[in-house]
Amino acid sequence: MKLTRRALPMLLAAPALAQAVPKVVVIGGGFGGTSCARALQGHGIAVTLVEARETYTSCPFSNAVIAGLRPISTLRFGYEGLRRAGITVVHGTATGVAGREVVLGDGTRLPFDRLVVSPGITLRFDALPGYSEAASETLPHAWQAGAQTELLARQLNAMEDGGTVIMTVPENPYRCPPGPYERASLIAYFLKTRKPRSKLLVLDAKDAFSKQRLFEAAWAALYPGILEYVPLSGGGKVTGVDVGARRVTTDFGDHDGAVINVIPPQRAGDLARVLAVADRSLWCPIDPESFESRLVPGVHVIGDAAIAGAMPKSAFAANAQGRVCAAAVAALLRGTPVQTPRLLNTCYSLVAPGYGISIAGVYRPANGLLTDVPGAGGTSPLNAPPTTREAEAHYAEDWFQTITTDAFG
Amino acid sequence: MRWRLLALLAWPAMAMAQEAPPGASTCLGCHASTRTDAAIPSLRGRDPADVAEAMRAFREGRRPATLMDRLAKGFSEEESQAIAAWIVR
Image (cartoon, rainbow over all chains, first blue to last red; front, side, top):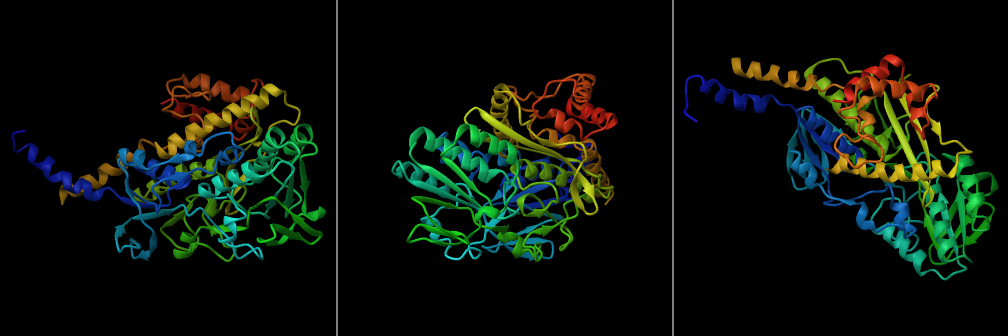
């Protein structure tokens, strides 16, 4: 192009334009972080995503892997799609924030105008006597998908028919409220179809859980004599585990298992501690309008780590929060009012192949928390015909494809 | 300096155009705008009046649903229309 007097201002403007585009760093490459990064990018913001791992393994549908219903390769996602979209992806670990820069373990500094973190969860290996990270190599938690998911699947496969599988379920709050019960359902399905003389004992530290009536109705119909559920009031709270003996202890007695899946208590991911955005509850208080931390201004917290009131810790919720947070961050950066948001959540659970159930909710800020919009939300009907269960199982798969495409590209 | 000022004005102008009404962006968690093979349909390119009518029918229990009846009840007629207008783009 010939340089003319008219073109000159354009060329001068180009670097100024680049300077004026605000910078947001997003730390955490799960469903929340990736969704937020892509949404921020859509708002014309320069986004850098920081994530230690080069491959993400999805927790949604990992229970199907445990039950041998799908390969784990279908749950793995890389970050090339984000790079293609123009997002800078840095594989590293944040060690802190200095002024308006994120500091990584290798000394890299990433400047930001606002910071979004999606720390996920850290398992509290200190919370259950006898359990530890080392113990999880024998008694897997499989609550962060990946090698642990495969370990539990292998153990179930290798177990002799007639063995007892034990699952321990923690008190609230934890990642994916209906997740343990979907897992129990699909393990029961695996046992029924592959090792029919075996049993599954589910020891729960609570008396009530998500989609309870739907799960219990399905268990009674599909898995009688296989799945035994013990709530808190029946002695379900596990007070310790013995790794060597493959034994769990409750106040009511000991249980031996051929395979033991311990889902330990959880807290906000380590990143929340590093950035001091978690409070004494071990989770992160946020402003429900903008997801800005109540503890550290300029830092927004989304996903499982956030205290989101009625909104559950789910991949769908993290995706929704990522989008809403991105819109709020864009508004704050341009100095316009933050819109009062409305958020959705939908969680599907499979109780067997072709048998899906769901819980849905609509949320809005009230009294400083995200609260249920009255009259909306709820679970699938208790008396739905098989075609509805089939449709919901199908929609669950469809949702998974959509959400992973949306998050990872 | 003058050009920098103009550039500063350019960023928000571009961003403003994309603001979704409350609740709309999270619909995309299921209704993908980029997938064409989805069982849960994309709403891009639909008539906004049809989308608003579907939301009304779900809300009033006039249309068979798995879960849209539960979600549609979280929005008023006015909110549904705003969502419909945005999500078809």
